[in-house]
Length: 396
Ligand SMILES: Cc1ncc(COP(=O)(O)O)c(C=O)c1O
Image (tube, rainbow, N blue to C red; front, side):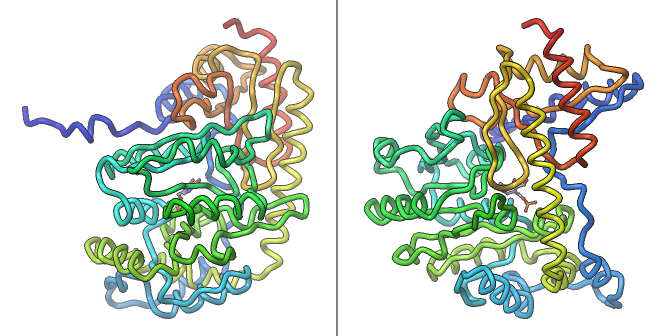
């Protein structure tokens, strides 16, 4: 039989995927499963975006420009300006989701064997993008005890080698919900300047901040114009995960022109989705006010309910719509499977994401889970009740 590549063999599976058959079986057995494991918001997509696609009367569904249409990129400039980010259309390459933005970025700045430092726990697919780019992830562990704050600069400096090309952060963080302060961004700016590295910030959750805190983008920081690369996406902002539109933003011209070569090789981002994404920029501010208020209420409800569980520790998220909780169990992979396979409370159970997959260091996060608050309040309350009942009877 022809052989599969080593790279292909090494590609990590989605950490949640191995639990899916158990969730499916539970449902077949008549158990309702509350999905605390996913990042798919239940929020309605802005009508203006859906209508824009319905109202098009294209006769040819043609390729778009590789870097995204001029009109969309120009309107994006206004969007960024409203967020105090000063860029122009030439600083933007539109991609097929934030996922492709990450792939193009890795491809443009790193060769096989190069290293990227990432605070862990991190969005698990960074592992997949690294493997497909032949890049080594060097983790730096942030701790639940510190609410997952940025590890100290001296810890970063210990990890920098001649192969280090970049530091990648997710701000606000998936899975931690951590929002980096301006001071933390300034510290990162100092390191990347000192060691001549790229600073990649995945800011796909930019809008989702709470407690009156404001997001500070690396593109607002002066002096790192040549280092700073922002990864962006419409997926979460407008609850448009299926559109598959994102972008790369950077003032580094050589970097942008390199990503454009990757963009040209894949020809074009999806045309209908570009129409929807351009229209989504007209979304009234009231939409965001309502959505953030809804997530904020869910966040408060979830944390309050979780903290009632004895032996459970939870980091307080300040952004995005996830939190990481430490459970009084030895192995959250086993626990998550057991919840689906063996447990139910009044015919209902929950699906959580074991957090070990969000760490690159073996053994870290073993007793942690990621919980997404993408369900309505009543469902979150019920889910935590189920979790509490489960922990009463679960035996390691
Ligand atoms: C932190 C982070 N970055 C990037 C992505 C990729 O998003 P998309 O490719 O849908 O834009 C996700 C999706 O969940 C995410 O959580």
